[in-house]
Amino acid sequence: MLFVNYPKCSTCRKAKKWLDEHNIDYDSRHIIDDNPAADELRKWWEISDLPLKRFFNTSGMKYRELKLKDKLPDMSEDEQLNLLATDGMLVKRPILVGDDVVLVGFKVKEWEEKLL
Image 1: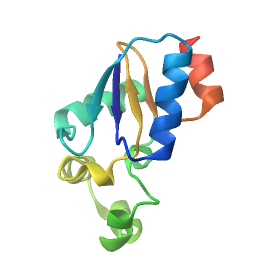
Image 2: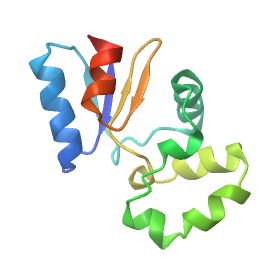
Image 3: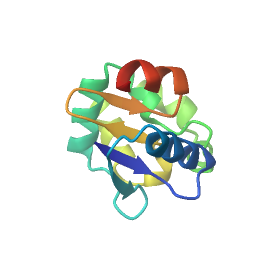
């Protein structure tokens, strides 16, 4: 599995601890140093079956600075994916990617249902 995270993020640290406690193997990827490309994000979004908005870090400063709450509804899916690919701080984290599962954000119950 691929664990896309921001090490300074407390939620990411909780998710990492949870993965370790449950002996789930993963490769870690720093979302700022190695931001997902638009094609990766599209693939993950399609696997996840989530609304594309869930991939945005809606509580982040960058999201607010760019006033994305007002702009996203008028943007195409391609425009949104390309925007996400420009800056890791726009992307909701952590993201856990497996062959047939993509989890965005860390919700213990959801992770238990999908992974255990």
